Length: 293
Image (cartoon, rainbow, N blue to C red; front, side, top):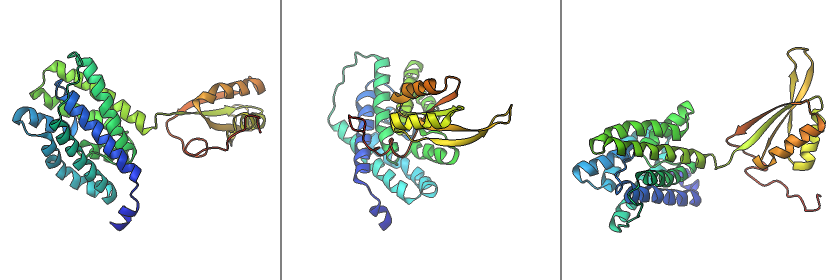
């Protein structure tokens, strides 16, 4: 327990607080007034609200207790404690926003409502997930799936949500459920976008007869380090070196021009990299002066 509190980062809990606020705001001010459901445990709380008029701030805590126990066994103490914090916080925001009703005029447009709810929920859950926690419920199940099988949380949540949404037909009509599915699709993609940092780099694999010249030019012009990979041609069995380099999307054109200038016959593979760590990406490179020195 002591080690947990030593590892607490205030920024994480600020993110949890803001993320839960976004999530609760969407549920109270967009989902419920426009008859949009939600997936997971939150969706079940909305079902109970519609059928029995039970406050979702209360059922959110009650339904999450058994799932928290499973999460404690699978995810460990540290993550469950932060999840418990998010569950309590989400219930607090749900309670608070119900005390201060606000009318958001969307002209009763279901599509706009679905898109707005998906955006707000995606931002809220994306912040919570990106900083290493969950809001309980299906989020815990989705994180277990991510850790065990490598399936992103956005995709897992979308599948779980679809099951709960089918149950929501108890109080929704078919059209309202379809708009809710649109909302879930939007939120899943926003979650993935935020988890990836909203940024994707580009990976170059360059097969050239002049690898050193290309690597040196990239380093000189862009200050991007590269790696040589030993290769052997399958046809002529000729050994050689390939150049591997990861750059910012804005630098793709410059790299292509360098390759074209040095070796127009080079074979080049370019791929999207969803996450990148290290100098130039997660911490700053040495800044170049305006005079190029």
